Length: 96
Image (cartoon, rainbow, N blue to C red; front, side):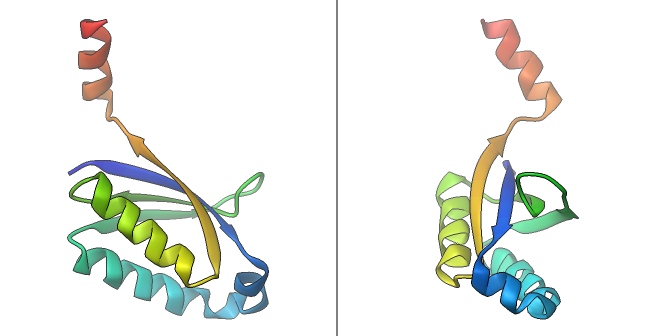
């Protein structure tokens, strides 16, 4: 399944209710699974973004649907990138 890395920032609303983050993460994991995906890793980060998530989804449209649903809740803003594993990278380089 394709891998997606999301850079996540809390909104003002998300920070105001930060103690609800564990519940929101559990709900996000459930929603990802309902779409056929899985949130594999979540990291708290220091720097330009608050969190990084690594997730698998069946395809780009499903990953986009998940990101838009999450954003519509108003607690976070995300930038999502499709990731290619090392094996795919090597195949892509061979084709250059």
